[in-house]
Length: 84
Image (tube, rainbow, N blue to C red; front, top):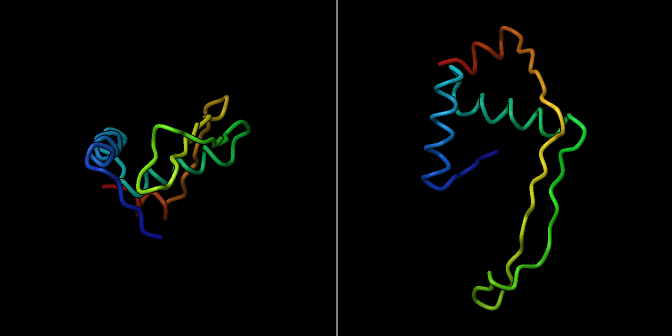
């Protein structure tokens, strides 16, 4: 899987990853695991009339984060792979 982010998002990801002592990949994996495995995480969609470009209507994506914090218990192999 290959992901690309705009400059501001990547800068923020790097800052948060550095604070946590993780690689950007490790941070993304921890965050996404908690989002999808804890109850309450959803993405809602709907039309967005202001976002039309080249005849394609825009869409809004509303991200609802899980209701409770999650804890990732990383095994040594993950720590080794994700640590800086």
